[in-house]
Length: 243
Image 1 (cartoon, one colour):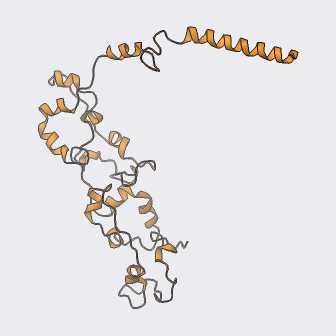
Image 2 (image 1 turned 180 degrees about the vertical axis):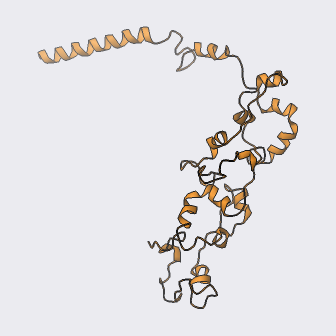
Image 3 (image 1 turned 45 degrees about the vertical axis):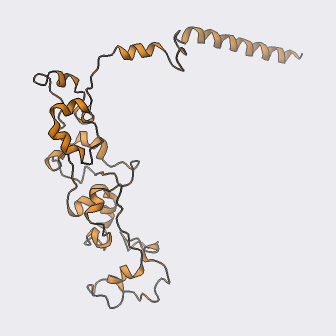
């Protein structure tokens, strides 16, 4: 065997011995007894003092709140997700109070805009939404309901709202083109807003002979853009920016 091969084998052998030695002293004795984890961790966790009571315990005293919350968009949100650990409060409600969120920070954990959240999840831009008012001054946290008008749409679609504000469509009500009404705002995950799907829809304002103000740009619907739907060439939220 070549001398360099012997040296390599010796090196690998030493590395393996060091690995086994380190593993012997570094890996806890109970590791692997029940699975790929430290078995003693089960006892450590079992020895921790309980802090959470669970929503069923909350309902024993606050059944009126549970009844309201059960039919709201917060139905699946645990009480202690907002109010913090409640076991001590449930055992001594007179002396041990729970946390009652005030201000805007706590609600923002879920509702401040984050592009990674699912489409339709209610989100707001805290810099534009509600001023400095506490969220609970407008929304009942146990039965949160959407606001009204364009501010409502902008709560979730702030990027679109900012784009609209700089274009010719800024004075259009969102429901002029998206006619889903309050159904989408009440259940954004299950009801999608209507999206114009024909040339005739945009032609109500932009075709020759339309009853819209004279300042609105006009086109000959029979020749303009061939058979393409308008938004395939024009960005509807900022029509000045062609595609």
